[in-house]
Image (cartoon, rainbow, N blue to C red; front, top):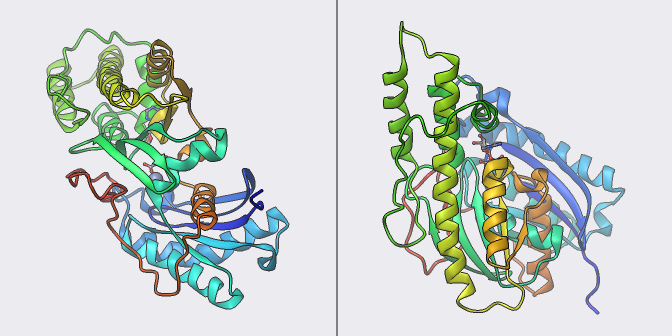
Length: 359
Ligand code: KG4
Ligand code: ZN
């Protein structure tokens, strides 16, 4: 039997400073300190501010995570840290912190790909078996992955421009709704008519699983301008535009997921499973549509709890655990990588989210 490992995870690749202790499939603690206030006046994450804040907060997060877990450094089996992709200053802060701890304790140091952390989360939460299909859909990520093993990810499609969360946020701004845009649009859409404004479904007429969301944003801008009367966007117009936008996103994600599922199911996996993660997966309309699609294809639908879908360090600890179990560790030469595609075989994507280029 494999021994149960206890791992400290550290995450600082974007605008959340996080530390967590995970033992086997149990999350003993998970501390996440966000930076929304720090960046709110700038319309996006300012890398230099983010890096400084990470450097200030990391020690406290690690201390807090160990304390809540009731674990001392000596009781750990390893230290896992996000080594990329992400904003380089932030990633460096985390890697330096982890190296210091590893050097002081002699514990194994494990560099983790942030996207692998997201992609392996359904194994932490639901213990699903390989291979499974994954859709990462957030403010910074949008890609389909067939997860064959803890270190074998096949990217079969993704956005060629914006991430969907970014499109939700920008559209909310155009419609005068609050940030973050996703929940605000979802709420407004409940009272809206999705068919009133004809909006495009970019790339749906093209084969494959790639997606595009930036054209949709431009279409919303035009539709909004056409709806404005007396210099105002009236409440019902705002609701109808929100409903139309959300319906377009649902259609795109559902149709592209249908194609991704067909590719995945082609290899007749023993226990077909589809997992969705990322902030946008909180959207009820998107979730329902994907869940129905999976039911039609006799595929299990897994959506980890939201706190584990968004950036956190428990996923990094868990991904590090899978590497350590398989004898993959790093040494003090571990470097921080701003770009680190999960699947080296796939062509690089152009897209970069509001939170910086991710893959
Ligand atoms: O995964 P996440 O917390 O952060 C990263 O991007 O890494 O995702 C945040 C994104 C935001 O763009 C937010 O607008 C979107 O997820 N989001 C939603 C909903 N809740 C959050 N989008 C659509 N519907 C929602 N209910
Ligand atoms: Zn992330």
